Length: 155
Image 1: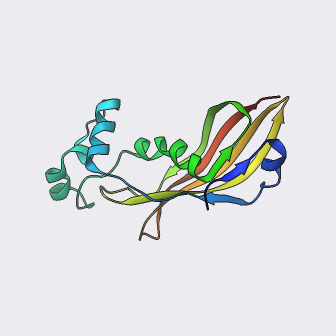
Image 2: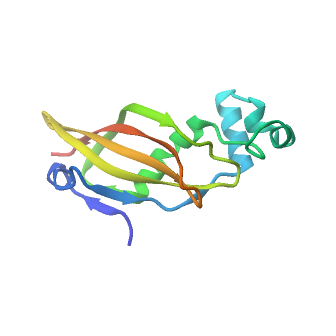
């Protein structure tokens, strides 16, 4: 089906209170976890030592960094919407985020997004979206919270 096309504020306003969409699944690999550890200097063994994590945690292996899963939001978001006529989009903030279930190595995850509100700030569109990260074959979500973007549209 492809991403939903958004041409501006009016298109977003029609979606307030509704589910915008669901991304495809992405499998989280140990290589990806290790690269994130290198990039963030967070080498805690529950992420980077498969043997120790298998023997010393209740997870049966390593788990992804919570911030790794959050950092995937822009990647997933672009699968859900194709916002046109944009000069610039800025990540403005995150609100009430809760990590609820660890994402284990080789889990497949996706996001589901609902539009909570849209505000026109003198030509800049502020969007608050509820997002959940789902783990394939797991009834519990990895996280949920609100992400806030600012869209600067071309005139």
